Image 1 (cartoon, rainbow, N blue to C red):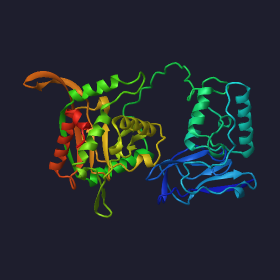
Image 2 (cartoon, rainbow, N blue to C red; image 1 turned 90 degrees about the horizontal axis):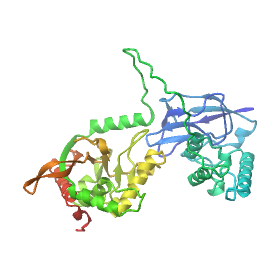
Image 3 (tube, rainbow, N blue to C red; image 1 turned 135 degrees about the vertical axis):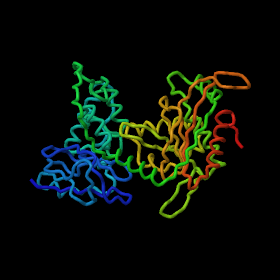
Image 4 (tube, one colour; image 1 turned 60 degrees about the vertical axis):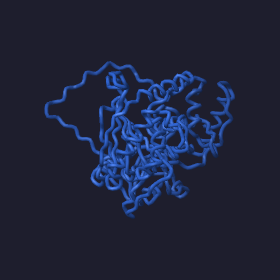
Length: 430
């Protein structure tokens, strides 16, 4: 037996340290090469770090919340003699495991062919001692109780990709569907224990939550926010939305307000380029963008993320709607890539039915503007000289007052209001 000391690898893009978010293993655990052993958080993204060798965990360095420099000892493995000499420590971004694995087995139906293919795949995978796939797929398989040796990979060199796992789940090991998560066992409802008066609970702020807190604090501390709230009559917009949704095939996702708002915003920004910009504080330069890379603030189980719809100015309404759904779901399911979570030039945010009357959104630095959508409600108001029931909604916006004057901010929101109150103008070029 020999020992293999694995040091925190270079995670790319100038990263010099990373915060430990959570260990997936503990001393004494047996791990296979490419198994995820720890999740870390850099200033850029969360990264799952795979084991470079197979063996037993001897020790780990650091607790969740600790910051570890690149090159510092991370974990020590006990391996078979010679195993360490055959392995190379991971460099670059380790969110993707090693590529070599068994060749893809022939796909079959539910009969003998599929069973033989699985047996062949398992035998080859066992012989090579590892299965090539991404840490995200490993986690999904672990949560679902699926042995990845049973899954035939269709990627390069037999690598298991997402569609392979989904096909296996749909088919099941014997042709029966397999739930992605085990069905919860019915247990008697436990009566919640009363907490003694004065009891407290301490929750350490680490990982994505710490990063969110840090960036929110920096944005609020460094950016003088100018807030502007305007009321919109969206009765016509609602009529258009309902009409378009009535033409959809049954089961197709319905159109929300956000794609319509996004399309109107793209049109308005042509006249207000100072709002589609970044402030480069290090160089003291405002960078105005011709393309609109739209950030969509999305609440996820891990906290607020801002996935990006690239080149919104080149997309149709339905393309915008589909891409907004795709990147938002990718963020919620932890499948969004680093590129999909960076590079927005202006952000829109919505609390949906919890939108309230007004809000004061915090700018997503280095951007200089953010547009917030509040709850849509029907209420009586004066329309064409008479009291009528109209559908209304407030837009709550924030601007970096250093670079966007209050007059320009108000003028932009008024232009956006006109587009949304007369939605035909959203689609008229000019």
